[in-house]
Amino acid sequence: EAQVTQNPRYLITVTGKKLTVTCSQNMNHEYMSWYRQDPGLGLRQIYYSMNVEVTDKGDVPEGYKVSRKEKRNFPLILESPSPNQTSLYFCATRRALRDQPQHFGDGTRLSIL
Amino acid sequence: AQSVTQLGSHVSVSEGALVLLRCNYSSSVPPYLFWYVQYPNQGLQLLLKYTSAATLVKGINGFEAEFKKSETSFHLTKPSAHMSDAAEYFCAVSDQRRGSQGNLIFGKGTKLSVKP
Image (cartoon, rainbow over all chains, first blue to last red; front, top):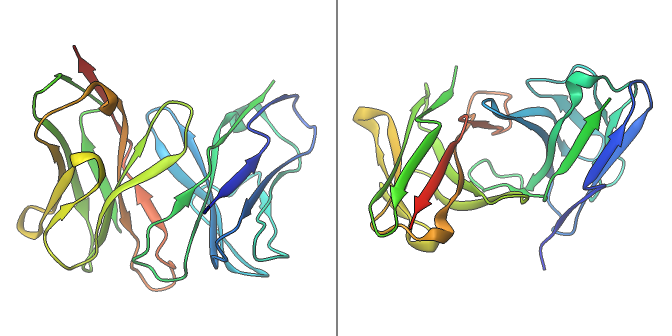
């Protein structure tokens, strides 16, 4: 079964405490991406990766880091989280072709106090 | 720049009534367009996509959308709403500009409520 798995699903933490949200896919997709979803703003892209060791900024990259050391994994790192990063985060993957739909994980709800 | 506008952040219909969710796009090149649905506490699920083939696209759960280039629209419809259709719906355009890698640009979403 095709899956995009995010962990954790929920996290409450405090300002400044480094955290990592993992994303793993079993579809051998080249393209992976992170979004944040905020009420009234829809989904905004944070970072994306076209393949191993190839990453680039999306529309709202400030305060986030990513890495793509393996094709199946694309972790999102918050080195020093702040309250304005409280949000619902989604990882998505697709095959390389632009006309292909993206497959989304079930989301990670982060609360930064 | 490419963009998507969804008219109406909330739409309420009665069960059995027509569902119409509006989406207009802006694109300097022929677009790829998508509708996604998000049920509570879940990720986004693809409903349908337009990639320059037939202008009337049929998707899952009885939904369909029509690409109208002259109106730059891609409205989502369903003839008869079910209670299970209550969810948030997102229209998205694939960024076809050079170097964009086809990143999705989402509208702000429309929450659909279905009344018994």
